[in-house]
Image (cartoon, rainbow, N blue to C red; front, side, top):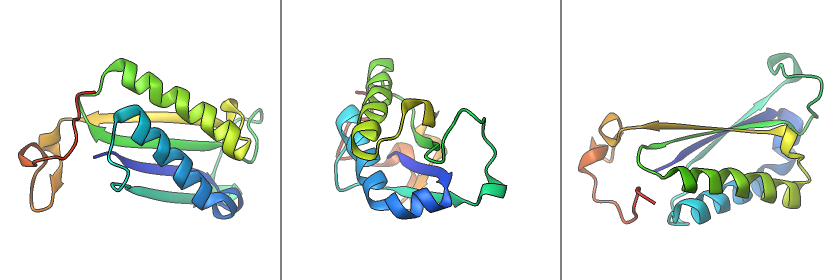
Length: 129
């Protein structure tokens, strides 16, 4: 049940929100064999004074944080990274230097979802991919 946060320059995020959303979600779906209908995202458009980053990054610089249950293989996570870098370049002309991806894994019992602990859920997809 990945929960995705996208941080970036407010103007860039607002102008490209739908394409960013669809591109990032397609990568999660393909890398993790994740159901397409389960899209959980939050956008954090930041004003210039609230977003410090190195001068070798552009105004397209984004940070993608994905919180998820533990269990995905290293290969699946590397596939996700590769897909994000490739598709963001093709779809939005974002240089890979302008993309940072942080995967945060926690045990499913640390999540509370649909009125129960995450480890009690009957998921329609596999986490161990």
